Image (cartoon, rainbow, N blue to C red; front, side, top):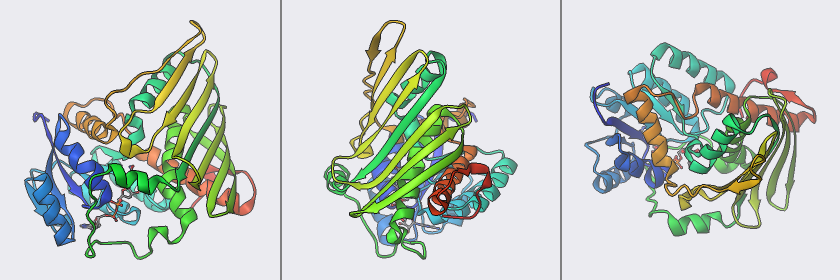
Length: 355
Ligand SMILES: NC(=O)c1ccc[n+]([C@@H]2O[C@H](COP(=O)([O-])OP(=O)(O)OC[C@H]3O[C@@H](n4cnc5c(N)ncnc54)[C@H](O)[C@@H]3O)[C@@H](O)[C@H]2O)c1
């Protein structure tokens, strides 16, 4: 493409679009908030007044028919991700789809077929891959660390995070006209925690240590907490352990420890709405010292848009999670659920169905 800015349309004017994507598209050096779309008229008009896209649509198909639109960000409820992605790809648009890719395996694989046939870029919104701390850790792992012997990662959503998030996010505008899936995503909390947070945890683990081949998981549901402890087998032979917990009675608690042949990495990740780069200590055995990158630019949602746009405009390698990463996360979530239900180790290649 010869243009310098990607014309992006955001589908959905809900919380993630308001707190992340509208500003990211507006601030990105190589993208433009060209269009927004929502069926909720009050929300759409208010967001159009605030963020000033060139166009505002109440109909997704009409937005996709706009020849000046290059790409869409799909910021709708999980249940709508696959259908909205397929529509965009078939209209010839590149897609950045919020995580999780999908709620089921068969629909994910059907989408993969459409991605392949489209020739368009498809990315899953695992924005943690644009956290500079995680990126520095990844570079160290890939270039200096040698073999990763073991990885532990945890993602513990806190009872206090709604108060903390409300204190720092922009005002989130709600609408009674918003289109919602038939089933309230929070009506089944185990499923909600897995889709909303487990998908991030699994992607972070895979970003560092590669493909997961099998899991053995236990789930404790006690005192209003949902706590999964998951033994993970990576294809590389790395020993893995994941802790996904909902409603811990403490601050947001997310991070990782990675033990390698020539060094170690310890990371602490913050509530994303602080826009603060993870604090990552990288220890190099050869000089017996650690360094911790500052990562002054902690706006991983904007950096995600820039990475996505760069790959489309300049043909640079895709830096975000692709369709295969999205499918791998869906498989891992299904395998964890089945392992809990059946009390045994489950290989990712034996799962099917939906969460
Ligand atoms: N990456 C992250 O850190 C992060 C954080 C929060 C949420 N998310 C993800 O973002 C997604 C959206 O979350 P949310 O809370 O903003 O959702 P939401 O359901 O509250 O809002 C979505 C909006 O999209 C609109 N919409 C849905 N289908 C439409 C259609 N076909 N045409 C026009 N408008 C349509 C709805 O009217 C609604 O206003 C979820 O998948 C969630 O997992 C990601």
